[in-house]
Image (tube, helix red, strand yellow):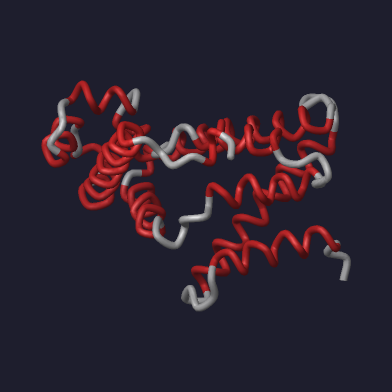
Length: 201
């Protein structure tokens, strides 16, 4: 069993619980009132922690809404690079991203709150899109490193990263559009299987 497989220690679980609570309250307030009417103090008072604690997790209030889990990009990068060598790069992406989405059904409310916050406060969109672009660049770099290619000049890392992101988006959209009557994982796996066999049909 690797270190990554071991259960989280009590300290780490408490840290994650605090971060999740701060994120949830910030998202809820921003969705209800607009980010312009939310302060760090209001969020921390609601959670029962200090302002200093908030800034231990997030550099600013906006990041708690647009980037609620700032470690996910690094986790995906590590998972892509650590995936078994016999997996294709696309399979490595499927498994790495799938690990991050394993709890999407439980976290669905957070996604809905984030979407509502972005609708209520369009001023958050540039930061949200900037964060998304940074995550995409990190994903391309991870695929390039796995393949021994150049993330700037080689096509394949970009292509694989972008089709993987498209598969995730399509799976989420279908899962929501069909009323979540199927598990997200089954749709997600189907999306990547379709990519692997080809879409020329």
